[in-house]
Image (cartoon, rainbow, N blue to C red; front, side, top):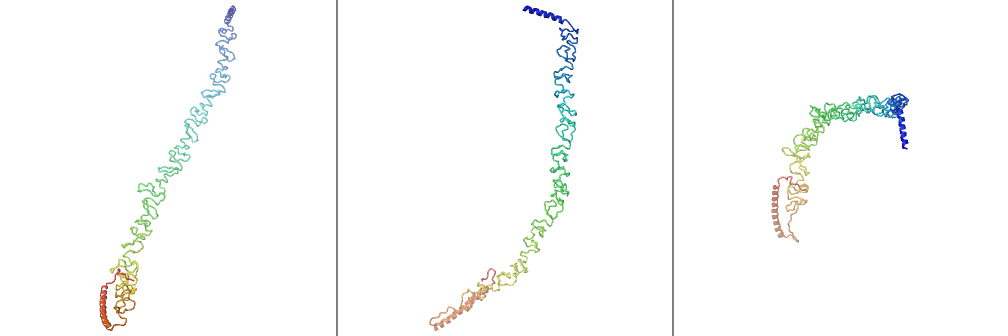
Length: 460
């Protein structure tokens, strides 16, 4: 067995050497040299590969290096349309990648990807084009008022009239007359800032800096005014205006209607219009208390009425009186110095004595007057309450002069002797009593000759 193996090996080796030594096609290569077809002179190692379906260079690859060969093994050859047969990602119908290559071999590079300039404006999505379907949108494009971010800075319409530059919610297109400040826009509250905040064409209207009534003064005042307009809605009211009686502070000095008949100049609560007859004197006004000064305080056209110097009852006498004295009752014209005394329980003639010379007066001072029933008002021993005396007078004014009292009579008649003696004695005693009583009465009249005063009121 071993011998058979050795013999076979030697046989094959000898046969191979003989074959390898033959260059049958004369191309300079034998099979031993790697000529894979020694019958064709154009086929040998290093031969130029041509697209004929034959392995010319004997590298066991057919048509490699030719357009018929799929160099990148992507299933496509140049002849079949592979535009880059060195790139397995490039072939007809391949997915287009953002790799600067024409992957699908349609002649366009990166179309449909962020790296492709779809709108031809020189910018792709990858280079910052925020809308690669519009040629007027790309980085640095001029911004226009079209509601788009033309320059791709993520701000729409900036620096155009459609943009709200100050962020107040209004644009120039909406009517914002100054889109640089948030305090200016249509219907904004007007501020005292010298700007037309509400965009109505008027500056500072309705504020203290605006002359709303057109009188030349504002609430803030004018440099030469000395004060501000206290009512900027009325052109008749401003500093220095003429004060008129209209209930307004026309001249803005803090006082109303001063210097007019409507003003209470003296502060007594009354003006000339109210009836104050002297508005420079606060003691004079309608209803003011009258004082003795020759001035009409109460403004009724009468001087000093109700005071002691005024003749209130028109009888020609006042309380202050004349040389003879004053009117003791200036409410009754019948009472005054020199008037006729009447029986009326009044001091008609103001002499301090009531009803003197009339039946009401107690002339003799016995406490009773003629009006009280005194039947002899000149004798104080005679009055309705007097004690009857043995004087032959009607002492108690009962209308009956009394008989002598004090006689003693026996039951059997008078004792002649005793009676005679008694009668004589009684006559003497009685005469003495009468004389004595008359002396007392005369003395009493002299004592009571002084007229009664107001303090001695007559008794009724």
